[in-house]
Image (cartoon, rainbow, N blue to C red; front, side, top):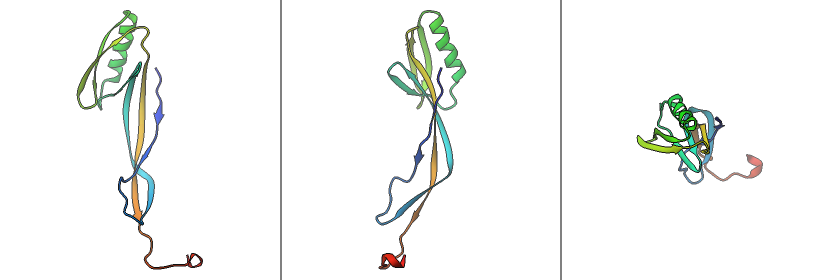
Length: 115
């Protein structure tokens, strides 16, 4: 089982023309759990019983194969067949939603030497 953390910064989607964008790193952290099984990627439902899912996966491998049920984001029920040859990675992705400030440039004409 591998757990990794990936971080990204999100800012405002739209900026006004001529504005400068300044992202502060004092925003809120959010995280989500991703499970990759072979070539499929699933985002687990928030608050999912991760220990229970791991126990089901381990039991299926020991038994030589079996279906594992879990709930993906959006309350989507998923059943996957896990065998001793299945590759499963569970990762936690964290991202910070940055507080963003739009700074308007001063009005008027300035020479570079004046700034």
